[in-house]
Image 1 (cartoon, rainbow, N blue to C red):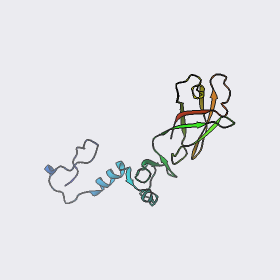
Image 2: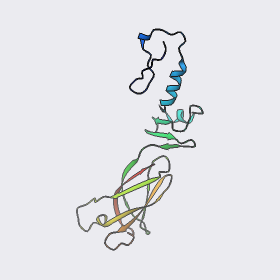
Image 3: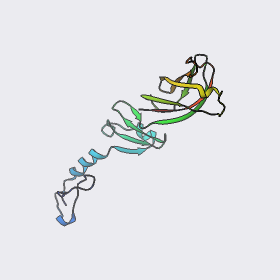
Image 4: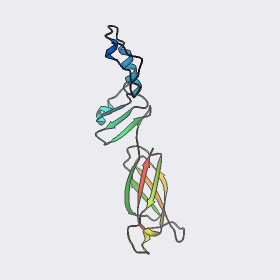
Length: 167
């Protein structure tokens, strides 16, 4: 049977039985539609790494069962889709910095940090720290902490917060 003139709810071609059989079925209609909308696959990291053109194309989404998150192919590399957040509790170094491993899988294009108050005491150092995203690398986010009371870098200070990274 041939594709009818009406489309399905997602724009897919319909092959109504009421129009009768057509021995000259055009399978290209299905192939073209599948190529246009079929941009997400699911599998392991090994299966993803084995992809080659034409199955590997810019914009392809991959649900990676090995890693547990989705990636998008940019034409040159796989980039993780969606943000990843994590809590931290760490002390700053002598320069007021804290280096955290983000586990994003690629270099995020942005990071956001929020300070947490782990205790109820008013003199708790973590209550008076303000964090700044200082550097983002392929594996880490470097934060710099400043004291809110004197606006100086918080040297050797304990603190806690929540970091979110993404593309």
